[in-house]
Amino acid sequence: MSYVAVVTGASRGIGEACATLLAERGMRVVVNYRWSRDEADAVVTAIRTAGGEAFAAQADVTVPDDVDRLVGDVRDRWGGVDVLVHNALAPFAMTSFQDITWEQLGGKLDQEMHAAFLVTKAVIPDMIERRRGRLVYLSTGLARQPRPGMIALGTAKAALGQFVRFVAQELGQHGITANVVAPSTVDQTWATEKLDTALIEQIAAATPLGRLARPIDVARTVAFFAGDEAAFTTGSFAPVNGGQAMD
Image (cartoon, rainbow, N blue to C red; front, top):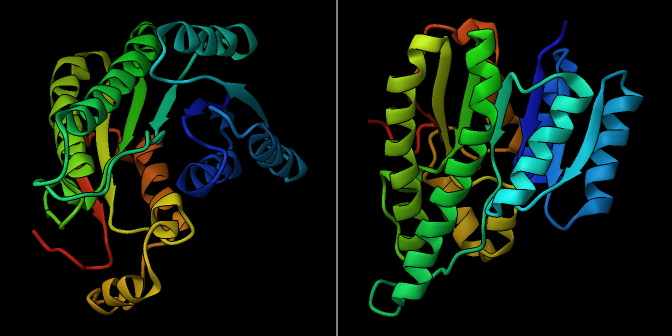
């Protein structure tokens, strides 16, 4: 029986690449979206056309009832969740510490952690019962390497990273792994749409591999942690940055 993977925020960008690649590797994939129904349906159609199994599922992962409904639908269709790829990204303010308000910073922290908490709580009962599970969380290099204007995102993702370590420590006894994948700036995503061309070129020039990350680069690392090859790796922070930052 193939594993069932839920990918949050999977209608485009990194999430779409993750959903598509996991399907290519034989998983049945739930393409979660909040607003972009047409884009999510297109991802599902592409997966099915290629011979995979997928369905689109609307849910705002910061809303408890939405998350419960999402996981309930998966359980009814396919018997439960084996893999969670938590990629959904709430909007955030791009501004300096001097200009940011607590509502902007605290709001991003609350949304980030609330979503991670809800989706993790919802999927782990199936994983504990099966004594096997994979939890993969999308972060950013900004969680460890600050950049001007990105305090809201960087702080929220740093909190997420510590949350994942605690989850990994506690759930390891049940055969569940939890890992963080942290890309640098990723081309063809919402984030790069907000940046001007000069800054994008500057970031690429500062990267030893000479370009921005692409969604498929991130998806390949996610797929590793979602599969059996990473069965003995948990609590890790995996940069996907082309050498831009080397810890």
